[in-house]
Length: 325
Ligand code: PMV
Image (cartoon, rainbow, N blue to C red; front, top):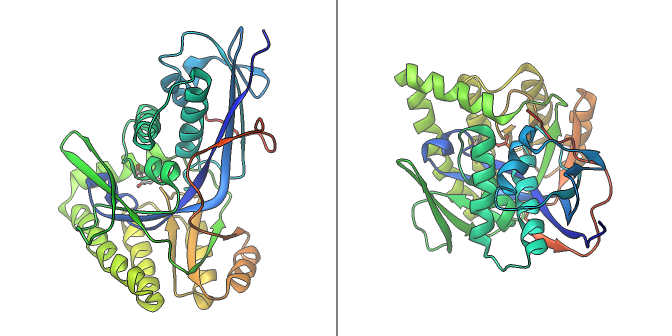
């Protein structure tokens, strides 16, 4: 069977402040990055991924996203978002795939529908987590989660169990960020689970989560004022708090320490345990060199990229290494 391809792409993201504590309904600030995942789908005789046979039962994101599709699909995914690295690769994949599948079906959906699909796929695959990544990868630009109402436009609000996440659109700051990838892949689920077990066991861990929430609000005000000194200091403090929660590692600490002499502040970004760190700096080239010299891979980021969007050409480039179970 030869059918038409339908294609979409979505950006990766980085977290300025608030990962992990956002899972408990605390605030977070996130920007979309200029690295994207693309996905193309077409109706087929049997499920394939990047040209190879696909057992859909083994890929939870695809299984969730195709739960209402009654025929097999050929799927192509390409990416310049490193996977399992804290840059939201699975949310970007889910967002791009949700849009590509809707295009194939010819129905019209809203941004909020794609967030529900992408968050649903993430939750199904990870067994937990917040809608922060899905919201950032679908909407693009900059978003804040659960920031006390300051007049920013509310995009949507999502409730699961006893937690609600209110997502607002924030202006993308005129600031330079450099991401450093340790090259260590660390899936999100086990890191979220680690913090959950720690927070169930001790009030100390719950106090750390509260403190991350408090400094994220302070950081948000610094971001709005354009105060890089304060924001950077808060980012570095956040890294220390995340380290206490047990989600940093020596490779992340090494890259954070390498970046700090040329930065306002630096921290791990995403779920940690490996993956990436991010630095706020006026010297991106120097920070990039410092990251390279300590064995990391730097990405000088243009933040605030467009969210999920239709692509006219089928996905091509580096095939995404999709997590299987
Ligand atoms: O590592 P990533 O890109 O999947 O980011 C995870 C962010 C967490 O706050 C740790 C989890 C979540 O669902 O919000």
